[in-house]
Image (spheres, rainbow, N blue to C red):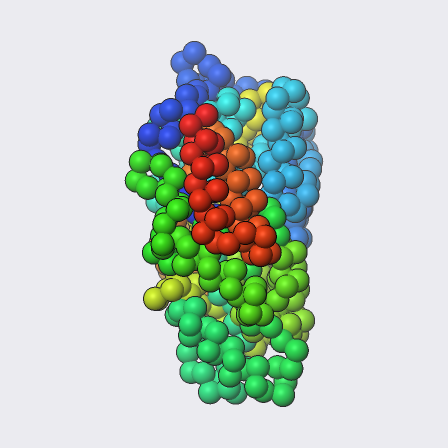
Length: 425
């Protein structure tokens, strides 16, 4: 769950030209910082909505009484998390040791020398899904280790679709709205809305915008990293979202939704379809919709859509103490065994490829093949130094279009200008 931050995240094309233009390094002349010092450390991440992190830390602390880890929980809002981590880095504070970074932040933090380059041979990167591994690298170096991945999926009410005569989940936006219309004719669907995602003005909006654009055949940047949102294809994607708000396919209150808001709305019977991350699966299984829902790939304009690539990477703050302990802790948290535990207990998407093909796990989480395909097909976000400016521009213009303040065409033209300025800095 892009910690369920909910963020979880967005979709742009990462490019070597952008990375090369950013500069960077590890803060050490040889590019290999010294990981020395043992003792207490902190683990900094977004609020744990699953309740599974502290038990894992308790296991570590019991085995390492002289190297205990204190869990510092930041807000669920990904933008607020990023800002607090940046503030800590800019003041060179040692309050934060190990950082749980949204995958899109890794290159930004590496380029600013806020995190250390890690010894790559220490971690089993070859066993992880390739797109996931790429999010942890910057200019050829490993600056973080994936602790989770994420791909957006479509949650839907199987019971209602079946009763309405819909035999399979929708593969296109048109099929989704048609299926919803049939469901809403049912007495038990009175007052339900069709679809929602994450549309509050935060990182989740960037994710949902980018997924809509890519799912309509558009792109946010071209192969060279040049912004490319002022196109007919991108307009079709943004039009789908804007018109859905206008005609009620997406309820007006969804303009305030982050991940948890949408989850709660779905679980309380307010939505037929919901775009969300896999973390939601285990929580929904404990709610009133247990046994009444399933997941499918995100729909698109003419077929299955494209997810944003989400997830989190663990990195060592450049200003931290006790870095030898920090490395051991990252190795512990990102091990195949422990990421399997997070999957089993909280449906957190693991970085290891083998876990998606494990028959026992598929029996517990039937959506794993769908999630694996979502991750492999996902479009990554841009690994750029000025990512904050990029996502802020996307949020501003998309929100204006969704609320009727601008036409989709005007919003995209303005966004194109802002993105060009952002990537040129």
